[in-house]
Amino acid sequence: MILVTGGCGFIGSAFVLRWLKDQDEPILNLDLLTYAGHPGNLAAVANDPRYRFVRGDIGDMALVQDLLSQHRPRAILNFAAESHVDRSIAAPQAFVQTNVVGTVKLLQAAHAYWQSMPGDEAARFRFLHVSTDEVYGSLQASEPPFRETNAYEPNSPYSASKAASDHFVRAWHHTFGLPTVTTNCSNNYGPRQFPEKLIPLMIHNGLKGLPLPVYGDGQQVRDWLHVDDHCSGLRAVLDHGRVGETYNIGGRSERTNLQVVHAICAALDSLVPLAGGGSHARLITHVKDRPGHDRRYAIDDSKIAGELGWQPSITFDDGMRQTIQWYLANQDWVESVTSGAYRQWVEQQYGGRPGS
Ligand code: NAD
Ligand code: TYD
Image 1 (cartoon, rainbow, N blue to C red):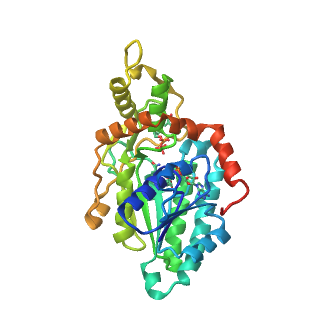
Image 2 (tube, rainbow, N blue to C red):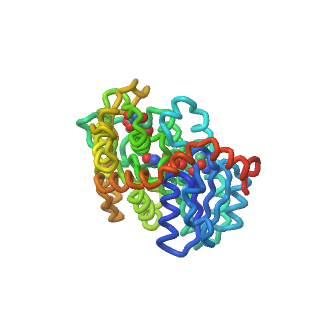
Image 3 (cartoon, helix red, strand yellow):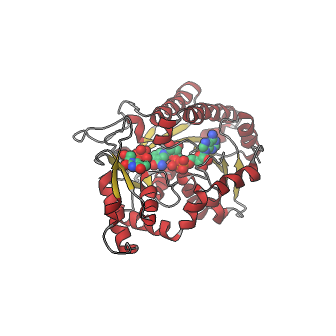
């Protein structure tokens, strides 16, 4: 079996769903259920005997050690993180706690467990750390995309915390021999993304007729990748990635934020025309820029493409249409994950009982 952390979040839940579709191997999910984690994302597999959920913190070493010795996973995939740049600017401490301290504690627990494994199992074991392209900093328009050899130049508290975690993963490999692999992926989009990130926020606001807040001039560039393609890249790295290496994963889909927002508006115009006519684009509102806003991210995926034969398979236009249709069909999901009632339910269900 394998252990994933943060499996109730956006990317982790996509990974778990796909895993259980693709093979019989059981999967254990350790998730703290912060505001960004929703067991409902995995309702479809909640009763599957191959799936097991435990609420808890990656930084709770006693709990993680118990889970490892009880379930004996052959791999750990670390998705758990605080993941939103704007929140990291407003309140950085949680990013240090989970992304840095939590990852180090997870590494310590994984290392002790790995050392206890018989030789052949230890040789097969992998610790896959899921990270971001934001660790490389910001590109000028004329610069080539990020390669794995680029220097780390994180600019936000979020990217600084992910960069720190990547360094600790590297150190646990070089110093202690833990068989790690790290992936640095570009911006993801797709179903079940919490509506604080650009794409789900714009879809949600567009559907409600609310302003579409574009930071600054909207000319910042991101390289968009459908979450299912990210998961297939993670699978390729887990199965065939070289130990101790890092792999960049990207979408080959650079777009300015304004291009993305206009694409969403055009899709909404045809799917749910505004009463009284006109385009959703009239809701676009330029607002104050994010402090320290990175101008451009872009990925050179030649390493993962050349070594592992991976490439994205979902075009931006197809993926975006499919994503908007998912949000249209699941408007109650957005209501439920943003409601106070949901937080109350989490507290009632799990409050004060980590590890349950
Ligand atoms: P998310 O915010 O949607 O989900 C994070 C999950 O981690 C939630 O389920 C949350 O409850 C859980 N979690 C948070 N703190 C925890 C802790 N201390 N212990 C256990 N669980 C905890 O994030 P996401 O967008 O799914 O991102 C997953 C990973 O991928 C993150 O490491 C992120 O840095 C990385 N990443 C994300 C993107 C993107 O575009 N979303 C791109 C590249 C890399
Ligand atoms: P986001 O989804 O927060 O991802 P990241 O900051 O990790 O790239 O933001 C994507 C881009 O969209 C980023 O350049 C900031 C911009 N943005 C807006 O213009 N308005 C918004 O309301 C949000 C949330 C983001």
